Length: 295
Length: 136
Ligand code: SF4
Ligand code: SF4
Image 1 (cartoon, rainbow over the protein chains, first blue to last red):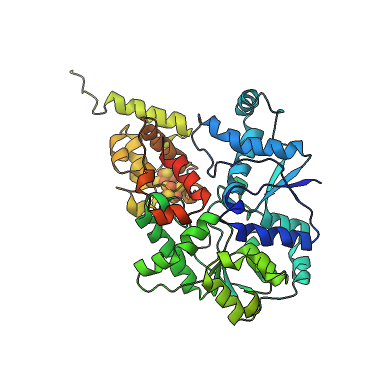
Image 2 (tube, rainbow over the protein chains, first blue to last red):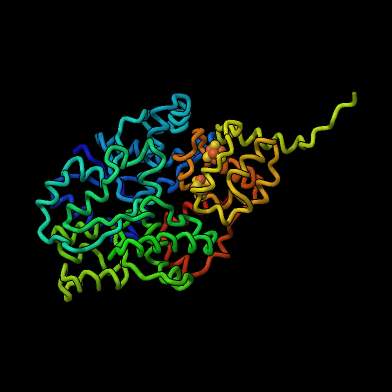
């Protein structure tokens, strides 16, 4: 086993609909990953202050857990975990002084120098399965479904951890492999409002409205996401967003892994549509991608 | 000739130097093009633009930047970082501004003010990031 899986806090609780189908899909596609037997919260945001090394301990400790399992790669599904772990890993690799301080601080842990590679689930799918093989494995193509790919911030910025650095259309490639139609969407790499939805809801709602407006303008049937905070701002809070801004129309949101599960013909229960709001299920049953009774 | 007293308060200069240290960024490299403000999703909530914030720091003035709450409203989306033609890591500058406030034991968000629905519905990462960014 060389690929460790780091779930992060939210996928084990509120965002089971991001995790369950994702793991079932990997199993279905013959990619073996093993959840790390021990892990802790990554810290959710990468510390930007130069002297704030204490907040690098949590992500680095997770990478040490992966290394001690003999993993050369650790995969995450949540965009924020991906960003935090990948940036902490780069810090350890590139800053010898900080690496040394971290190692000396964690006396109980083996030294870590960035040996593990942090990858996002989408990169893993593209590199180890490939869009052609994925397309061939799709038994329930989402033909005719216009999907707006939402990368948000943490999958693509800053550039040194961007999952779209090599392939700027990775999410579009994924959507096309499912048989759906990726739509051009001006807000694909914009901010959803992030944690400001909690601290400053008015600003958060205003930001989310811009993303929903762009999805409406692209005539998307659905918006796909890879981050539980994006899902909260653009999905859970969409009713508030639409109510507060004239001219917006509701657009169902999905985690990208839910559509993957549906297209691969996995048991719809694994896609946990029950956690995604009724509009998601309605869209899929109306278009006959899933049977009404199983929703 | 009598020397002209500096209009910059030494306290303010000290704070600006601290911002340079915490951010690792040199604000004097900024050429005031305004690109960061043009792409910033939160700029309309700030008291003035990110470009103006950097400009005040170039002149050693921290007070206006604190009053404009730029650090508080920056969502660390990093849009400006990839666009800045001078390679300035702008959210690191505003993280440092925020740290100046937080390190005086001041919180920029209060748990009790968050609506109950939000507490029940929002995902864990929403709270972890909010409290990491906005509490001391
Ligand atoms: S990182 Fe902050 S300052 Fe830069 S664009 Fe995003 S919100 Fe604006
Ligand atoms: S984009 Fe860079 S150079 Fe232009 S105003 Fe902003 S910080 Fe200054």
